[in-house]
Structures are given as C-alpha cells and as structure tokens.
Length: 196
Image (cartoon, helix red, strand yellow):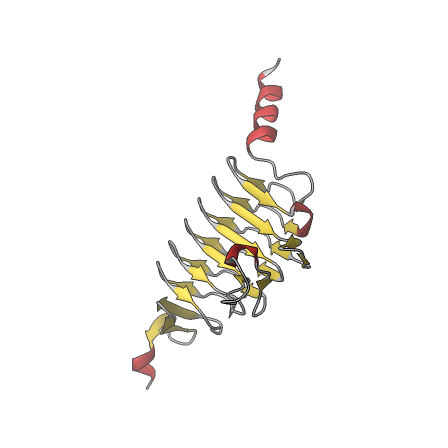
C-alpha cells in the first residue's frame, strides 16, 4: 500500500466526522469522540472538534420527542473534552474558538420531586443558544439555555453564562457578568467602570 493511501485511510479512521453529519470540506471530529444524533449536526468548512469531544443532538429521551439542531459555522475550533448537548438548537457562528472542557447545553433534566427518578424525567429547555462570530470561550466555561452571545465576545475561564450579552463583551464569573467592552473608536478593551 502506498504512503498516500495509508495516510488517507488513517485520516478517515481517526478524524472524519460520522457520515450522517453534514460536514464541509476539511472539517474533522477527532477520535476518540461521542456523537449522538449525527443527522441533526452540521459543520461548515475547516472546522474541528478535538479529542474526547461529545456532540449530542437528542431526538428522543424519556419517551418524549425533540427536534434538535447543532450547527457549527466555518473555521470553528472546539477543544478537547468539550460537550455540546441540544434538544432545541445550538448555533456557533464562523470563526469561534472554544477552549477545552467547555460545556454548552440548551437543556436540563426535569426536577419534579414527585416525578420519579430525575434521569427518567423528560428534558426541558429555556431556549436555544447562539454564539456570535469570532467569539472566544475560555477553559471550563459553561453556556446555559437561552443564552445569546454577540460577535467578538470573550468568555473567561470557569465562567457560568446564564444570560445574554451583546457584541464586543468581555465577561467572566459565576454567574458571568460584564467586565469590559471593546471600544472601536479607542481600539482597546475598556472596563465597564471607566465608561460610567
């Protein structure tokens, strides 16, 4: 077997997204990986999910049907051990960079005290998640249901994002709060207190 053929075979085994995923050119999901609901997942061109990533678009859980969607734009790069789970919709626009261990989920387990085991209760969602273009999400950050982040946002490490923020926001904390905004006129990040 020629070297080029071996290289192509190894690439197919280790990197190529499952065939049911709509994936653009030069897009990879590295192994080992976990992918649930591949037919509800779409990747643009030149995007990647690093090793131990988990993409889960859940069509059925605890006897209830859902219409999930996970959409990654062009040039989206997701770090190792990241987890994206959806029963509604997660959209990550072009040029986003997600660090390792990032958690993005538009769902939660039912928590009815009289509903039996939590793991057997239907899932619920407070809305989809939309991450604007060219946003950076730091190490171990969590993005929770119903959140929209504008373009060119920065999310600090270990942040828990519970509500939406506009373009050019630098946020951090648990829950995350606005620390800085990028000033296009000054060409720098300006702390919120300096604007008041």
